[in-house]
Image 1 (tube, helix red, strand yellow):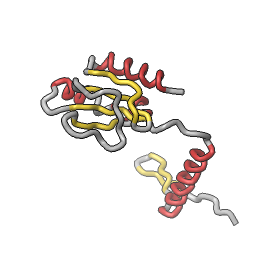
Image 2 (cartoon, helix red, strand yellow; image 1 turned 135 degrees about the horizontal axis):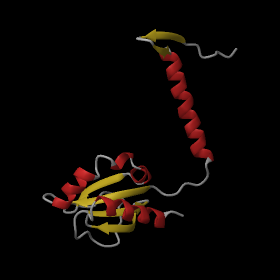
Image 3 (cartoon, one colour; image 1 turned 180 degrees about the vertical axis):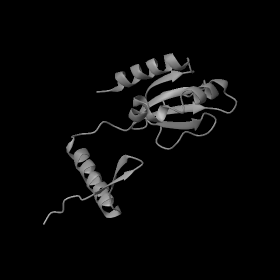
Image 4 (cartoon, one colour; image 1 turned 135 degrees about the vertical axis):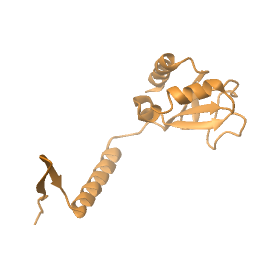
Length: 144
C-alpha cells in the first residue's frame, strides 16, 4: 500500500504554512539522492573534472582585489559551478595531481585544469569585467 504524502495546513499571521513531519522529509531527501545518482549514471560518459586553480602569494595586491571583487560570488556563478576554485600558494609545491604547462611567474594566475592538467591560463587580474569574459572564453574553448 503506497502512502500519500500527508500534510497539515496551518495559518500563522494570515500566511498558510504547510508542515511535514521529519520522516517524510528524510524520505524525500533519500528519493532525491537516489534519483540524482541514477541520472548521473545514466547520463553517459563524463567530461573530466574541471577546476580553476588560482596561484597566489602573500602581499599580492591583485589577489586581494580579486578576493574582494570576485571571490564572494565565484562559487555560485555558472563559471564557479563549472570549474570550482582550487587555490595554491605559488611558493609552495603544487597540490597533488596538478600538472602545469610551465611554472607560475605572476600572481594571480588562473589556470584551467581538466583532470589536473593545464588546459589554459590567465596571468594577472584584468578587473572584474574582463575576468568574467576571459574565463568564459577559456571554458568555452575547453568544452568538447
